[in-house]
Length: 174
Image (cartoon, rainbow, N blue to C red; front, side, top):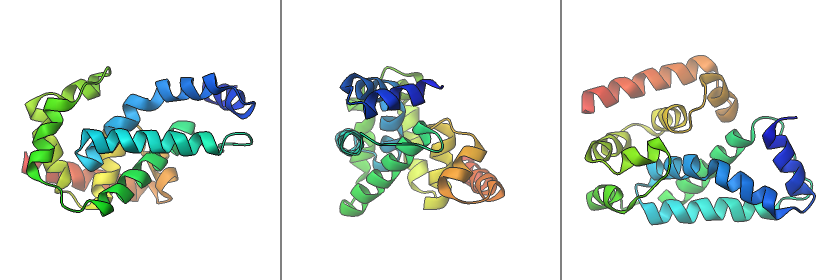
């Protein structure tokens, strides 16, 4: 039994420490993904908490047929996209404030604090949604192409081409 399955079993039995362990295990990755979609630390943190509140509500008889990380990433992306639709007016200063307000414990999060990452976020914001999603899942979500294909319910060839085109556009923008 995998660690995630064990944690889910604990959660389904009402052990809230299981939820805490899942939160601690995935919070940095999920927050990084939300940041890459929203470009706002506070909005990303709100999405993270919303995802886990909803996740806690459905516990009890919750089963994942694929990966827990993939499920949580999908929830985070959906929540962040919904938030983004509400706040369509993304300003350049929100992107620049990311480096000033963010503190993460993982290496990817630490990159956000540097000025170069602000440029990457600006470039990511210019990618078409399909390419943006695949690039974020691959780079920040550390998912394999096959996992992304399963998660998005598209072919692996489509994932690879979206990633390739997205990276080419990023290179041109940077």
